[in-house]
Amino acid sequence: MLLRTISCARSSRISSIRILSSLFGTLIYSFLSLLTIEVISILFNSFFCGILPFELFSSIVLVFVLTLLISSWFISDSMNSSSTVSKLIFYPSES
Image 1 (cartoon, rainbow, N blue to C red):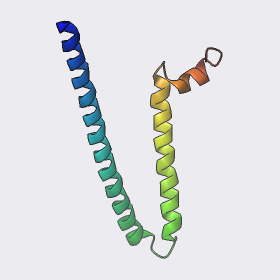
Image 2 (image 1 turned 180 degrees about the vertical axis):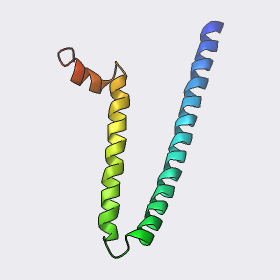
Image 3 (image 1 turned 90 degrees about the vertical axis):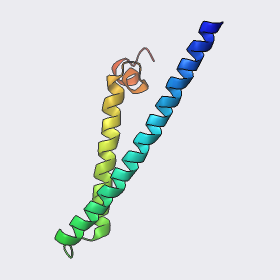
């Protein structure tokens, strides 16, 4: 009984650490995204002012960033052998 309590406390502590690290990572990612948007707007204003509309430029950058995020998720998910994506692509008959 005592061992179960200890193992539950350990797993609870580990899951809370994972949640906190995930939230911290999300916070850092959001900050870096905002910083990137500011840098892109400064670069746009100094280099492309008058050549390309800012809305078009920001749309191109947004599509590029979203494509990178989706492809990185797909690659990291497909490296996990128990993932849904890899099961559907590499082992379609088993799913």
